[in-house]
Image 1 (cartoon, rainbow, N blue to C red):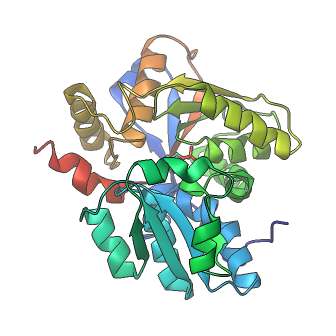
Image 2: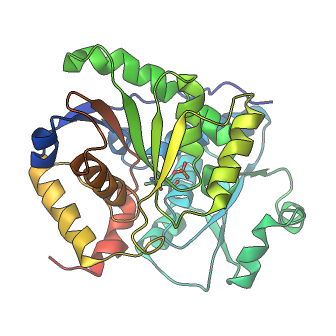
Length: 310
Ligand SMILES: Cc1ncc(COP(=O)(O)O)c(C=O)c1O
């Protein structure tokens, strides 16, 4: 049973994007700046975590347990939320112990860390994965990797109404679709559920297209009692999850400079670059209006862009 979120979900500002390639194609794009909703609980994380936090608090859980990599935006947001709301947090990390800027923050936020190695992390899909951890941390709430699953998706549904309430500020009476980065596809699923088939949702995959995300998405929508449709997944991965090439980094820097909107290379810059490809390829007719969701993740820039000094 999913409880209603006791936290006031923040409302993200909406900003028109003015870029040459959009103007040339006659396509209008507004950016829903989830990156600006909170300095620590940034991006889609606030929304994906909201029901987990509410349920943990309502059930009187001592804390929350989750897992991710050493640059995980999800663990970063969970640790920040735990500190803010007085809930302990435990992070199970992929790989061997290392001190990335993200890990330094997790420690500062008071998250208890355990390094699982790579083999140990792969075991996360096993049914009994959480059992020993719950013996160590009784009563803790387990949050799936990336805040995924139906509980995470339900937290993203309010984004649809939030956006609708703001369209008039841009002088828009409506828009023709959503565009956003997709990892697990959870945020996208929340939008699809909220849209109930009205407007399509385009998911720019940050990892290589595999049947796993599509299958997961179909299952998730099924669990929500929705048909498996209303979205399109497209490959934005450029050679793999977390892989950066110089064209991507140049695009990121140029786009930031021209728009004043900061991006990061793992999700948002790849999603924007895929959008440019589709726009320049004539996929959208003149007069199309799209909403690009800035899903945050800017804390991850520190390590990612350190490889590419300007
Ligand atoms: C910045 C950013 N954008 C997009 C995503 C992908 O979100 P989802 O897993 O809900 O598809 C993530 C991962 O949660 C993320 O950290």
